Image (cartoon, rainbow, N blue to C red; front, side):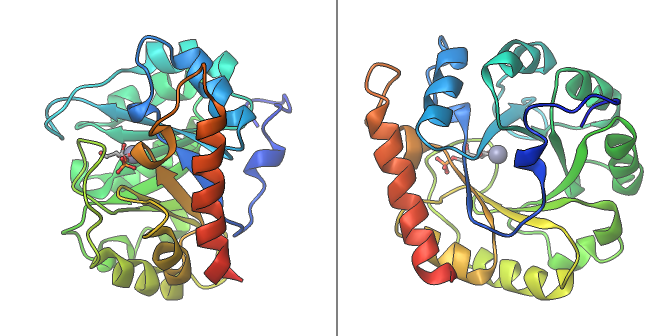
Length: 242
Ligand code: DX5
Ligand code: ZN
C-alpha cells in the first residue's frame, strides 16, 4: 500500500511462505519490457524481479528508476526491485516513487545498511536485504527486525545464466532457522532452474527468482513457453516443499 490508497497488488504482498516464482527481466527482451512483464504475469509469475546494476557495485549496467516507472503500469503483481548499486541511499526515494513494492539493497553496499533499511521502509516500500555468496548469515543478525525479505544470492551478482553455488543452500537453512516465526521472506536469486529449485525450496526459500530458466525458448509471441517454464520450476519446488 502506498499512501492511503489500496493498490491492486496489496493482496499479492500479503505475507505467506507459499512458493512464489519471480522471473528476472534481466533475461527479457530489453526492447519490449512492458509486454514481457504482461506476458510473464499472464503465464503465472507471482512477482516481477527487476535487476538494477550500476557498473560499480557489480560489473554490469542495466537501468534505473525511470525504467522502473515506465514498466510499473504493466505490472499487476509485485515489483521486486533488486539494487546492485553503491551507494544506495540517494536513490531510494526515486525507486519508491517509481512504484517499487520491495526494494532490496546489498549488505555489502555500504557501511550503514541499518539506515538504508530504515529509509526504504520510510519511503513506503518493503525492505529487502541481499547477501553475496561470500557473506555469512551473521551479517543480518542485528537487522532481522528491519527486514521484510532476505535475498540469498545463488551466484555472484552481475549476470544472468550462471551456475548455482551449492554452498548457499546451507546459508538458506541457517537463515530459515534464525528467522523463526518472523514474517520475513527468503528469496533465492541466481541459478534457479528445475534441477536446483527443489533443493532451494527444501532449504527454506519461498521466493524463487529465475531469469534464464523462465525466458529460455520463449518470447512475447510465444508466451506459452514462459508458462511451461514457470510451471516446471514451481512443480519441482513444490514437490518437496509440502
Ligand atoms: C544476478 C541477478 C539475478 C539474475 C538471475 O545478478 O540478480 O536476478 O538475473 O538470473 P538467472 O536466473 O539466469 O541466474
Ligand atoms: Zn536479482
